[in-house]
Image 1 (cartoon, rainbow, N blue to C red):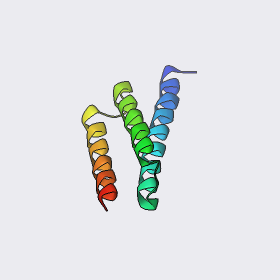
Image 2 (cartoon, one colour):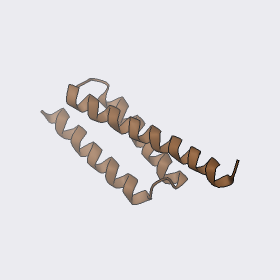
Image 3 (cartoon, rainbow, N blue to C red):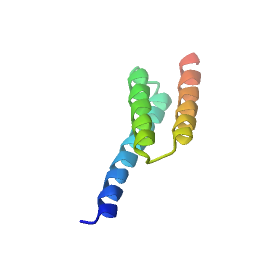
Image 4 (tube, rainbow, N blue to C red):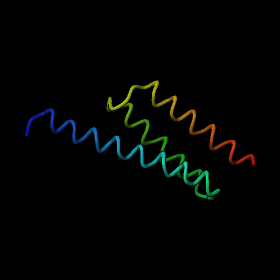
Length: 78
């Protein structure tokens, strides 16, 4: 297998995991679940890994995490 194909598969896996984690947080926010803190922690970890591996830029990961935390914090206050 070519190197580019291997890297594409790995990048897609990382991308899929952080997107799934973010969706879990959004779903937890909408339903008002008690597992919100754990979901946010997992999403933060996955976004950090994606930025570290070069799947997304560092500032993009920070921006996504910031917006996610903003949503989570406003839902907790309600």
